[in-house]
Length: 267
Figure 1: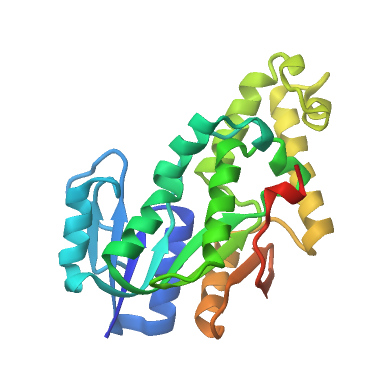
Figure 2: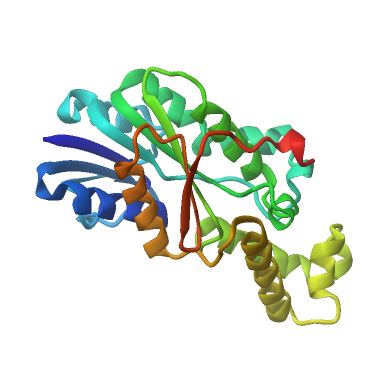
């Protein structure tokens, strides 16, 4: 029997991970899925054998994970993140980066050190494209930290699923902040972003912004408009690949690569 741990089991990536485990291993897999938000008594995550509520930074949550199957897991999917978005990556402050890393990156290191996990899979995005450089803020630095960690040797094997734009908490947060800023387009210092909102409604500006991302992704990576099904397929590709490092998914296109995206090459 194989054991799997999913941190962020209610999110888009966590849902895709659980679905892929069930597709690949069926009922022979045991899945512990963690989530955190507004608590709902009796809530259980579909596809998981056990649902654990709580902040992954809470020592009591870690102790409960360590008590489950003696803290031994074949794969840990770390599918949660929270950090400042809506500003250029280059303008993220040290304080905002530290705050973003607190949930988006730092717990990965602690879980690797304190659990017995064969492989840890983390998540990233194509944060070096022009539109993401202009809006991904502190999260861009957290994703770079994940990508650098992915290629480091550790107690566990490291892998990373890097995905194109899909509807998520981060993408909704960026759109919300842009909508607020667009009430006065002069607040948007990036000329590309400003061009989407000048003389247009905020709704139209957001649509233009998303179309800009999709066009840039398609030009750079060959496809765009990544869906939940595409993310599910990328997890299956992870399971079907031998020692993958980065599993890239952008639209329907899925491919493997070995190198991290470094901000110094783009800023």
